[in-house]
Picture 1 (cartoon, rainbow, N blue to C red):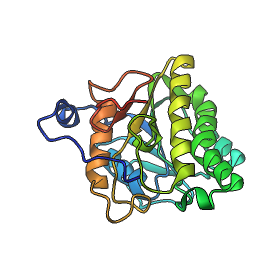
Picture 2: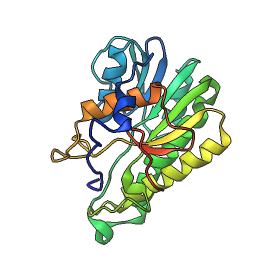
Picture 3: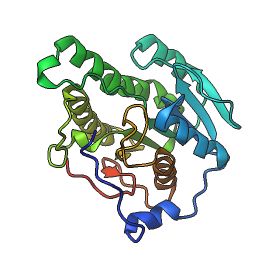
Picture 4: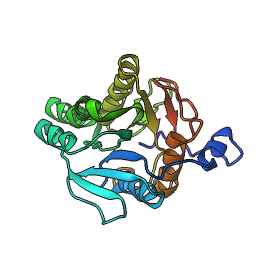
Length: 240
């Protein structure tokens, strides 16, 4: 988690993308992990801009205009199928945000069962939900998977002991590349920054409200990255 550098300055090309006028009102978004953390901030921004949001979470967040809570447990295949069956077409955007960090004790405390659990939730869950949502996706839908620079072979130098999390994000990035090959919709991975949520911790330097604003603006704006991309929330590429 702590491998995430601060966002680029306001003069960067990415900052122009984040502040560009975008048309969100009337679009339909699916957001997972929407009950708290980054997912809740994303949902708040979308609600404020007039989007229709299907907020998938184990526990619903606050009542917001245009937001429909949908019960969802990403570790449970039957829950994934039920949630998808409750979502009507067309879906314009999917934000796969739900994930767990898991154990941070390093190699000394890593177990096969724990690694399997993190991979199940962070990798298999988003893939299964994507498959279940295919009939509801608009032809030009954008599927965004919240990943992490910690999953990059090149840039993911991380002193923390979260082996399972880093491995799961590396696998998720490869899954995004595979989906981009297989689906006509735009599919991309996004590093949200090291943000001050329950997962990121109180010492994280990036504000989740600002990160959510930039993510929404990037995905719905004219400079949304191409399918198969792995970028930060400014749209700047991250090496695999």
